[in-house]
Image (tube, rainbow, N blue to C red; front, side, top):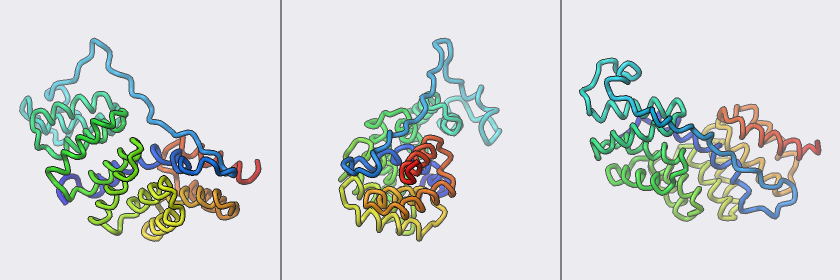
Amino acid sequence: MSGLCPSTDKNLKHIWYLILFLGALLIGCQSAPTVPPPTLPTLAATPAPKATESLPTPTEIAGQVEPTRTAPAGDPAEYLAAGKKYWEAGEITRAIAALETAVSLDPNLLEAKFYLGNAYTGAGRLVDAEAQFRAVLEIDAAHLAAHSNLGVVYLQMEQIDQALAEFEAALALDDADAEIYYLLGVTSVRRGELEKAQERFEQAIKLDPELPEPYFGLGTLYALMGETEKAIEAIETFLSKGPAQDPAAEAEAKRMLGMLKGQ
């Protein structure tokens, strides 16, 4: 697979899973009396640069990116490196500015398009994110992370069938990716296919027992089915695994756990 290495892809994908879906698992099951649908956690807004600020030039950011050797002015790779640094620091506005520059300098720079798609998603610019991930797939149809992240975008846009198609395309590229099974489980919930969702969450756990998210999915399903003890066990397991360093997700799981225990 061309593009980013799998470990980098996985880290980027992981950012979205809890942020986007923990609050969305129950959207298709709002009539359930046991656990009301939680509020969807949102990305923290990144303040826009002040009017007097501007995007640093490649020379100014050369000391912040690796390799340390300064690239020529106007080198798209330099802006890509800066955009990745901003992205990793949570500075979404600056990441977008740098990555857009990289893409404008080299429209075929696949990695810049991929990161820009993630940055647009973080900014809530879903149509723009869709365009970037599709542009990646036009260059590399076998880019697994672009398929899965495009599916994430479609879920946010309530285009469930399109999301399913992208996750199935990703699964065809790697049928041992636990996170894709988790996303397929979420999609099944949104389609009202709860038995299939349970199977997919269980498959995700079988492939990667340390992945936290599927335990939350199972806990939600058990709660809907009135199997309180199983729901409590699954959500406690989710919390013990460390819910992706997302405070909102942890708070939501604790809230559900308290309700299930009657506290």
